[in-house]
Amino acid sequence: DTEVTQTPKHLVMGMTNKKSLKCEQHMGHRAMYWYKQKAKKPPELMFVYSYEKLSINESVPSRFSPECPNSSLLNLHLHALQPEDSALYLCASSQEAGFGNSPLHFGNGTRLTVT
Amino acid sequence: AQSVAQPEDQVNVAEGNPLTVKCTYSVSGNPYLFWYVQYPNRGLQFLLKYITGDNLVKGSYGFEAEFNKSQTSFHLKKPSALVSDSALYFCAVRDKAAGNKLTFGGGTRVLVKP
Image (cartoon, rainbow over all chains, first blue to last red; front, side):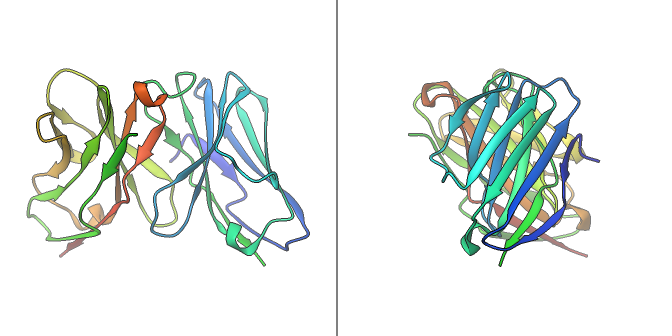
């Protein structure tokens, strides 16, 4: 079982909807990440939070809005998405702030379908 | 810029036979290297990492990897594959000179046949 919990597991939303993805970890990790993964492709980095502050935004469109309410929680707010945004969204955490040499621990993801 | 190549899209192996998944990398500094495995409808699971020291790294589920600096390779190996090892495997590299960002290879699908 993964130590990073993501909800919901599946989400179907229309292009005008507003929804949020949630991620939680209780390992005391100080860095948290959002990745987007298309089928049979490697994950693509979207955002990195270090000590609850946004440290990396990989030029992600503003229809994706991250939020880190505290050191254990990470949200991704979605608004006015496009069908091409359909993908598996993965949350991850690591012990060190930023990347360092500690591995990332991934959740099982949210499978998002935009109709 | 750092990069990772996994030259094989798919590797087929019979159960009980040795398994090798290839990975080569390119970095400007000293690399941190990782292997992850992804089962269907799951996130990525960490298998092992090379930071420094012994070139042979042992990881989870009987996997190991050998760091070869001269060939800039970090191939994943398992002496005797199981059907349950069938999954998608990603090699990844992190380089301090590149801001410590993690770069993934394209992935290799492993199919172990009974």
